[in-house]
Length: 110
Image 1 (cartoon, rainbow, N blue to C red):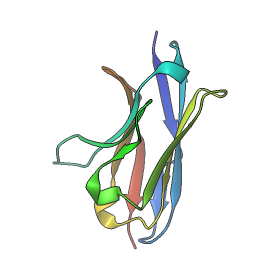
Image 2 (image 1 turned 135 degrees about the horizontal axis):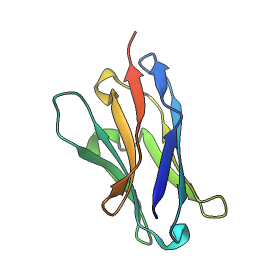
Image 3 (image 1 turned 30 degrees about the horizontal axis):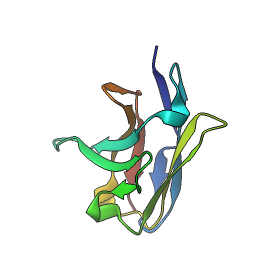
Image 4 (image 1 turned 90 degrees about the horizontal axis):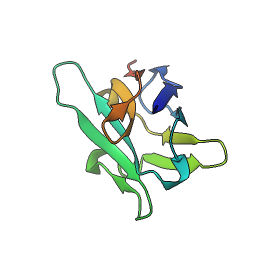
């Protein structure tokens, strides 16, 4: 059974940083294509970044500010978010196929 547990969200000022983590279990994490996604109130669900065997992909609006990485020994996915903007405010989810975690809230506000 796929389990994904996100953590690391919070309230941060514009220009600040946060590091999200996703603890994965129930599947072969090292072989899995993993995605970070987000959804802001009233807005569409959008894919932020994907990591697999191909080069990591990023939503254009976060490119150069967000960095996705993974530690296969710890079955953990990370999203380092720098230079955060108010538009980055959203619930952030770790996604594997049709499964996603409960999400972690990121709020960027002065």
